Image (tube, rainbow, N blue to C red):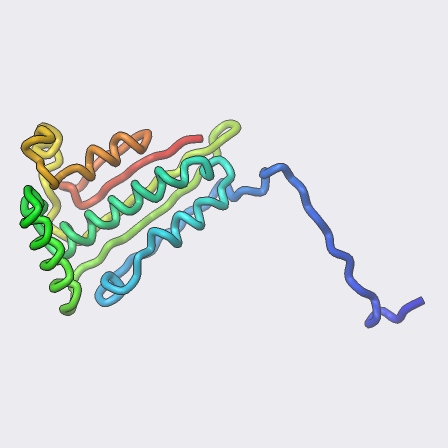
Length: 182
């Protein structure tokens, strides 16, 4: 018989058919200052959400929605960029020139992201909230603007509405809340 210090631990293999997904948790964080220009939280968040088996088939939608919400909060809320610039190709180039310029300076403001996962029946619900410290925007005005009037701007809100089961903009456009169910 081997002494206890010579016992080789045996690997334990767990197979739970995907039931070990975390189904009741929340996460909140806030990016400020230099972090806004240096760190894109979207890939990290999508990777985290892929641990939830019921959300894996929606990872593309989640990536698109999170990218759009984060970009809008950063670009319009914190950096104060006007998407009306993107009405034509020349304006689009100017928009991204200004974005790079403003991110190159000391950035004031913040973008907060909150994720909440809750069990529901045999599935669950994910609530994503993205809040920025900016001035907000008129969500109702954007909702009645036609695609021709929007040009290259304002498409993000309609994209998020199409991809997410439920999408709302609150607090004068400073808070976006979307919901996915599975």
